[in-house]
Image (cartoon, rainbow, N blue to C red; front, side, top):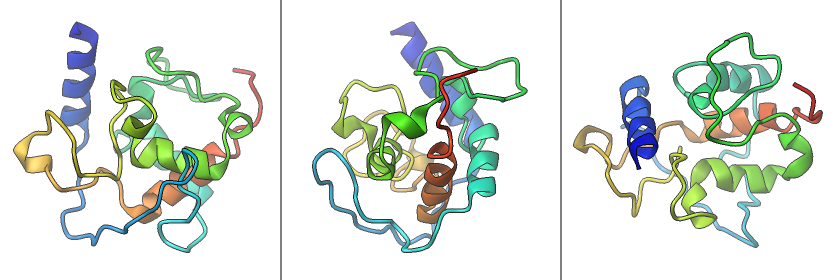
Amino acid sequence: MYIKTLIIINLLIFINFVHANEELVSYDIVDLSIPSSLTNEDGDIKNGRDIVLSRRGNCLACHKIPSGNDIFQGNIGPSLAGVGNRYTISELRLRLVNPYVLNPDSVMPAFYNVRGLKRVDKKFREKPILTAQEIEDVISWLFTLKTEEM
């Protein structure tokens, strides 16, 4: 429980920008995936990598990332090495948008879903962590991670 609390506090501290003015896109969950793009735009791989490696995504708090130069990488979540082989783009989209569909006890934040969440500070309620396009950008980069090597 202590680790979960630390992770949640860490995420709230480092998420320094939320998207209050973005109109949320609805999405359908089919077979434990979100098959349709949130934007109908291709994801920008470079921007996706930048988000993952920045405090915006704060992925390094929990995940080890291949060829990440940051020595302070997490080990609470699974390594992202080879994630592009383990999941389809549609499955990755669900994991980013709303991981609680897969695991209600997950400590990973819902980066796009804003409904039905617990323990969300008032200033972050009803606001996604990432925009729909940023979700697509991150997915595009994650899908390039095909090797299991670190």
